[in-house]
Image (tube, rainbow, N blue to C red; front, side):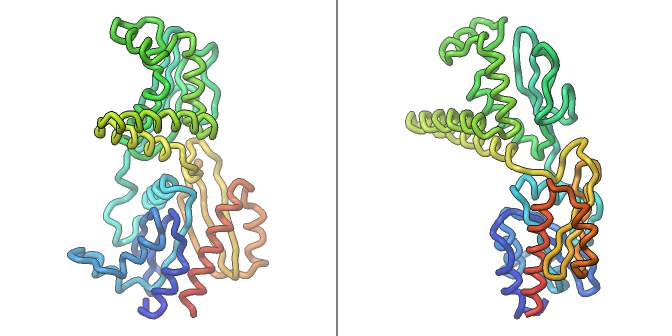
Amino acid sequence: MRSEPIGRVIAALPGEPGVYRFRDDRGRAIYLGRATDLRHRVASYWGDLGDRRHLRRMVPQVTRIEALPCDSVHEATWLERNLLETSKPRWNRVRGGLEVPTYVTLTRTATAARLGVVHSPVGAGVPGAPGAPDGTGVRTFGPYLGGTRSRLAVDGLDRALGLAYAGDRLGGFDRDMARVRGVSALERTARAELAAAALVGEPAALAQVTQCLVARRDEAAAALAFEVAAKIQAEIAALAWLTAPQRVTVDGGPDADVAGWCDGILVRLEVHGGRLTRWQERSVTRASAAPLLEATPPTWADFAERAARQAAALRAAAAR
């Protein structure tokens, strides 16, 4: 791109999470990435690239910038992975992503309840699905990206709710810990349900768990146990990551054709098996876009409309 419109295009990007894509003068996608802050991340390519020789070769080939805003960094990470698994542009080094997909399990038996992290879904379904009958079985939550984050989030839930100490068959040490923590087997069901509610992002449950962890973190810091405080802060951040809004990857979700239109620009997204896997932009009239807009599921309408507004803003900035 000419240096003159670069500043205007970058200024038209939002300071929020999302996925960005670079195209060359033949309209080919040459790079796709994700960002916590789209404006800051894209601007960095036109800053000091230091010894990143591959970027110094790629950036002069960029003639168009596209961006798809997301509701969270977690969602942007999933979207980047899905798109790269479908089609890898020339300058991307790997297909898919580096983060490991995981699931969190809540296992309940007649005598105990425990949380775990696995790499494949098991048991009684997905977020929001009911557990197995009679309070037994396994309930699965996810998928999430990042094994370390998932394990930290589980550690935080265990720290806040003490499920490990709510069993009927505890050893001596665990019985002492249950007494110190004020945990009773009689509370096992309520604590397990609170964990489940937090994992599906129920606001009151998530706030209760987070407030408990914040209090524990502050107590550790006041006692000069800074490593413990740092670990708890990491658990808080990981739980926020897992429960952040994201709709681009839902196991078993429906297929959908999603479209948004603004100022002559149509953004079309394809969802297959609950995963958003294709992203296209082109110039069309409102009349031509109408059938696609009418077919867009209501649950995707706001996402598509925001994508179209962003696409139109970038095209307008580049054309000025």
